Amino acid sequence: MRPKRIWTGGALMAALVAGSAAQAQTAARSDNTAFGTTSAEFLLLGAGARGAALGGSFAAIATDVTALYWNPGGLALIDHSGLTISTYEYLADTRYSWVGIAFPMDQGARAIGFHGATFGFSDAPVYTLEAPDGDGTVYRVAESYFAATYAQNFSDRFSAGFSAKMIVDQLGRTSGTAFAVDFGTSFHAQVGPRPIRASFTIQNLGTTLKHDGAGLDATIERQPPPGQPNFPQEPQPAALRTKDFQLPTLFRVGLAFDFVTNASTRVTVTSEFNQPNNSRPTAGGGMEWSLLNIGNSGFGAHVRGGYTYQPDNDVTPDATAAGFASTVGSQENLDGVAFGGGLGFEKGDFGFGVDYANRGLGILGRTHYLSASITW
Image (cartoon, rainbow, N blue to C red):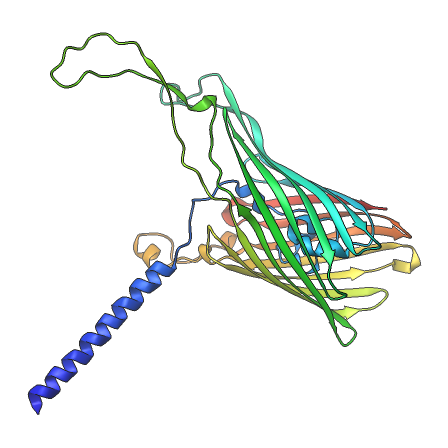
C-alpha cells in the first residue's frame, strides 16, 4: 500500500504544481496592457473645467455642452443651445484647448453638436548628433481632432449618443490621420426625491495612426557586395517607414447621486471606473456643492473636488529590489487630486458661466484648467 500511496501523493503534487504553473501563465497572458503603444494621447485630456475639477469622474452628470466629450448620451439632456470654450495649461509649455457647440432639437427629444480640440507647441529647436546644441532650425507639434455628435432620448430615463471624429497628428514635417467613434449612454432615475444617474461610455474606438511626410525622406548609398570593387554609385532616394499605433481607447462606467437637492442647494457625489487600453484600470470619485439662484438673483456658485486612484503609481516589490524608492513621496501622493469651482448666471433662456480647475500630476507639478460657457 505504501508505494501506491507514494505514487498517488506524487501525482497529486505534480498536478498541483502544474495547475499553479498554468494559473501563473494565464495571469501573465491576461495582463495585455499596451503600455506606451498608443498615439494621440491628447484625446484623454478632457473638456471643460467642471469635469477636470471632479477628477474626470463626470460622465454620469455630463448634461451640458461638455457632454460632447465626456458622454454623447448626456447631450440629449441639454435644455438650451450652448457654446463652451476651455483652455488647459499643460506640461512643458504645452497647451490644450477645446471648443464645443450644441443644439437641442424636437423639443429636447434629440440633440446635435460639434466639437474639436488642439494640443501642442511650436518653435522648438532641433537637436541632432551632429549639432547637439541645435542646428538652427525649429519644429512644431500640432495634434487636433474634429467631431460631430448626435444624441437621442429613447425614454424619460434613457438616452444614448455617438460621435464621429477625425484625428490629425502633425509632428515636425510628418503627419498622420485617424478616424474614431465615441459611444455613450445615460440612465437617469430617482431614489425618492433624489436623482441617481449612471453612464457607460467608450471613447476613441477606431483606426490606427501612422505618420508619413517629407520628414521621413532619406538618401542611401548602395554598398558593393563583399569582395567586389567599390565603384562610385549615385545616392538613391528612399523613404523611412513608421509603425502604426493604436488610439488611446477608454471604457468608462460612472454613477452619480444627489444627496441634497432643492431649489437653492445641490450636493452631488460621483464615482467612475476607467479601463484604458494603454494603462491599468483606474477609479475615482468627486463631489460638487452648488448654491443655486442665490437671493433669487439668477447667480450660482459651485465648489468641486475629486481624486483618481492610479495603480501605475504604486511601487512594486520588483521595483524596490531594482533600487527604486520603496515609498511614495508627498508629491506623488497628490497625483490625481483635483479641485475647483465656478460662478454662473441664468435667467430665462440666457446663461453664462466661468469655471476653474486645478489638478495634480505628481512630481510633474500641477496644471490649470479654465473654461467659459454661454447658453441661449
